[in-house]
Amino acid sequence: MCNPCHSPEGLAGRDAAIEEALSLPAGAVTFEPASPEVFCRQLHVAVEQSPVAIAITDLNGRILYANRCYQEISGYSLSDLLGRTPALVQSGETPAEIYRELWGAITNGCVWEGVLKNRRGNGEIYWAKQVITPVRNAAGELVNFVAVQEDVTKQRRQQNELRLLAMVFETGQATLITDAEMRIEKVNQAFVDITGYQAEEVVGQTPRLFKSGRHDKAFYDRLWESLETTGHWQGEIWNRNRFGEVYPLWQSITAVLDDQGQVRNYVAVFHNISERKCMEQELERQASRDHLTGAYNRRAFDTALRQAMQEAEHDGQPLSLLLLDIDHFKAVNDRHGHDVGDRVLQSVAKRLSTSLRSSDLLARWGGEEFAILLPGTPLKGAATFADRLRTQVAEQRLHGISITVSIGISDLRAGEGPEALLRRVDTALYRAKNAGRNSVVVDAEQGGNGESAHEEEVP
Image (cartoon, rainbow, N blue to C red; front, top):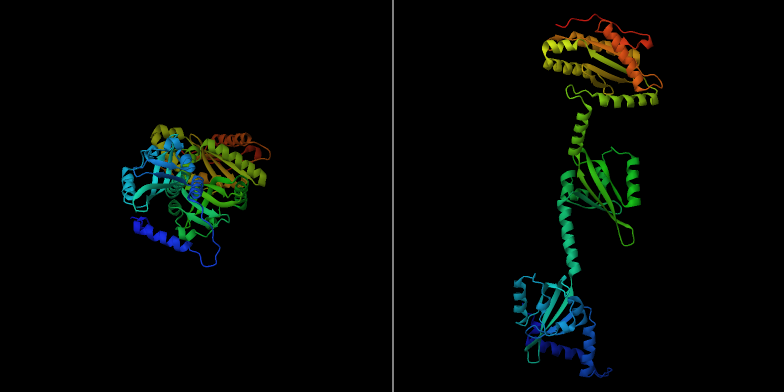
């Protein structure tokens, strides 16, 4: 739309208003206006020193004047600009429709406002916010155009960065922003998807809302120490969602400082690592378990034995170890096949594991041998438990086969290593097998033997 102030009638009305505003009441102090020559010089200085870029063109767009700021923004000297049209600074990236709109407006006496994408003299692209005003003479005829422009490249770049950040905020990892007092100010959709909380439920709250209870005070002390000294913390943390489920996160927290170096906000970015943790647990299980029986493997058992021995010595508690061998297992394989032999191993392992406490540990020691760790169990209790296991296995037919086991037992002695304990329990097992199998034998150095039973024939 055309600005009515620039029509002939508007100009005449404006002049009358100016004359009325400048009329002085009686008795007022009067002053002599500057001569036209002085006024023009003052006006030229004011325009030349203006912080905004100003250019004057004829009706064909040829530049008649450009102030210092216009020259600085465009990257061209006055001699480069005079007589040229603004096409000199066009980048070729502004849509032609905008220029048609621009010329349609100003040639019809209307003010045009808009943003053009221009190119400086050195080839650099810049954004110019422009207001182009038609100028009329006393007769109301268009005689010139005055362009006032501002370099808004920095603002446009900031706007683009903000839009990009907003896009990342809404489409990236779960994010929450708090103030310096840890009160939540903003969360994104990924946060809602992971936690189950809507934004309005958490804004104004603190992240204590999500505490799972799995971390102690020392954990949070370390977290805050890192934030206060480095401005950053990252690590694994367990939170509780809106439905009460506890789940693991990988979280990064960053302190945002103001110009005075004071914390203004905290930004936390996190993602749910439940799937990764499950995969890690499965890989750990596969690495530590015997694939056939599901019992711990020899490598995992060695680690568990050392740890159990350290804990027993530290706490002054007993620790017993059983080594169990399936009697005549080779004959089972030879007579019934390896598939049946594998099922027998699985059944024995299942029978043994159902008799254990959560603190006990069953491992497949090798071939047809199994090891059982009994933390907190003295030798006498271990012997009773072992004989009960022997009886349970002997009383059941596994896959139509009568199976018996021989068991050697020993317990931990002060100051000894795993090798000494294993050597003594292996010796006890050897004696149990030599005693006719289907037997329980306690470490001879302890001076006791368990009951012995005659070997049952393998059908």
